[in-house]
Length: 149
Image 1 (cartoon, helix red, strand yellow):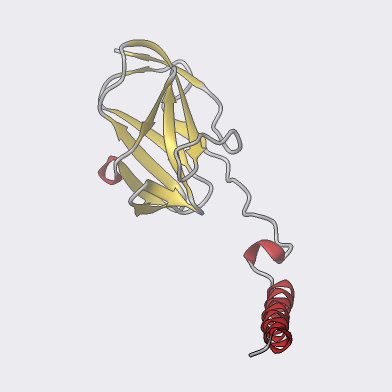
Image 2 (cartoon, helix red, strand yellow):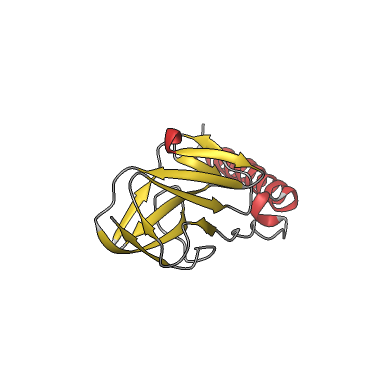
């Protein structure tokens, strides 16, 4: 093969590869994906603590009854909804329930049985965490003060 004919073959190969890449780019541009649909990400549902009440004196094990705002399903990351799971903040500590710790009560209500908490005055708050256990500010319950006996 002479240098000139080898150059033409190389040019053709690059041309075919370039055309294939352009077709693929056009396909993905037109096809789009989940992020390209314009649909908003699912809203973070609000968590609401129903029991115990603000200022209650509680004993252990403590049953925290809450409304998740959406149905939860048991999975490897605890009880989940749309890629998020529930954590309980106690002071500066975050607890994650094992699947056996949460009992469905019907609808979107659940009871989380917490076996151990520090004694004394505590602030409790339920919050959503993502798959990497990063807390989300959206949807967190309001902090609740209780006294643990």
